[in-house]
Image 1 (tube, rainbow, N blue to C red):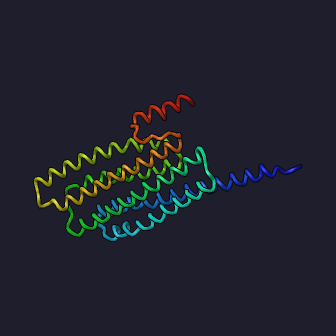
Image 2: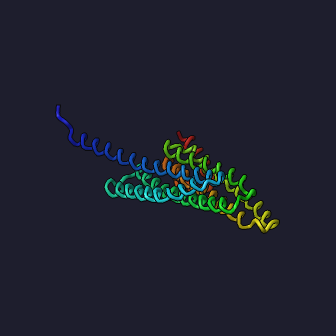
Image 3: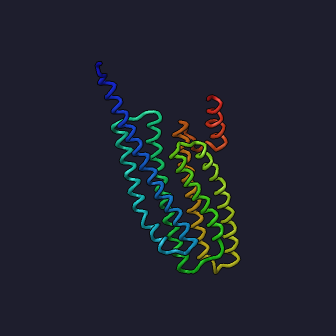
Length: 246
């Protein structure tokens, strides 16, 4: 029976291409795992006044930067050699964009570690630690969930992460108002409280970056760019419309 060489060649190319896409996704998820640990360790170093842990968070920043470069290089190679289309192209784009947000999450974790070291050195401030712990645990879960959404191509979980960012923003604003009031009442605490406020700002930014990655997941799975259109429209136009048409 004659062998269809074109079919065999196309199958071989397809399998190799799929392997390259999977390698790209694996590199991104490995980077995500490293960043997730950075965030968790940074929060723990603050809560436990652990200088050694804070130092390890800052030391890992170079590793995360290197991983971002590798993801971008692999994505560029795939784009140049394979010229992907449709869902394959969306995966490559989503990986490159997500790697940028992951690198910035790592930067914010390193900032938190630096402030943790400063607070441990100059004495703890009782004000703001409860808020930092609460918001920290919140964004830690957001990062974990958005990476799980990317790993599973789970657009519903990604939407949940995006919606959760509003709660983090609300808690952040409330905590900042309370800390400003406290500094006005006790100017001696200004320096220490300012450090906590910078920690809260970094945590809020981590939430923003987690939301960005969640939006890339929705784009990857649904094929719709949902940035800047509002969560109500995302739910109405992307999720409800797609389920109706299924």
